[in-house]
Amino acid sequence: MTQTTADSPARRQRAQIKERTLRTDPWWRYPLITFIIFMAFLVYATWAIFDTSYFMAPYHAPFASPCLATSCPEGARLFGFAPFGDWYTLPPGLLILGLPAGFRFTCYYYRKAYYRGFWLSPPACAVNEPHKKYTGESRFPLILQNVHRYFFYAAIVVGLILAYDAVKALIEKPDGLGTWILIVNAILINLYSLSCHSCRHITAGRLNHFSKHPVRYRAWNVVSKLNAKHQELALVSMFSVMGADLYVRLVAKGIIAFSFA
Ligand code: FES
Image (spheres, rainbow, N blue to C red):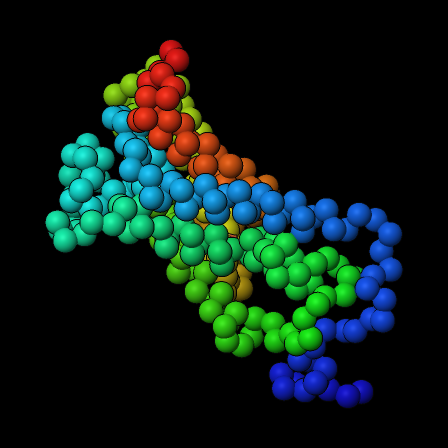
């Protein structure tokens, strides 16, 4: 049997088929819908980052939380903390954008989805791709996707801050619709983070005997159940963060009422 190495031609390209595909089902739906949904999210996120109406006490738009700039309104600052001085005049959301964005960009689910929907690499199983060369994720630049585990730690911190925003809103305005929108969003964001494959590895990676680590075994069981729903949580939390963010901005702009309660 011939062995393939990392540099052998067999490893540098995918299996080639003459037909574009032999599939007869509407395989193009998944990459097309993925492309439309992700593009909508990217367009919204870009608008939100540069929109200045991100705060209406006690609500804080998730895309701009934590607010770390001096330009943030007093109540919007995390514990009154504003480490960036007057010299920082760009939108506050830009300061933290890289953490949740990096987490989602390097997520295993999103990778699969945008490799198919945006790069068509491949567009679907058993469908020929337009690219001539394939080097996988073992080389630059895609090897950088391995930083995902570090983004996971940052995502846990961001998730806790969103939970803090939700609890703060609950204390200050328990009957507000926005309060419950922020609470649901914080729960979904944190469930998505905890369902991460890196989190599952942290709970039980490198263990040889579960019997000697009962706490980690229990944690692994919980995270594994969440992990089985990772794709769903990735999508639902994406919609929830977009919806919560839009709600707070519309309230802050005075377009909708502060509370329906
Ligand atoms: S694998 Fe999706 S968030 Fe970690």
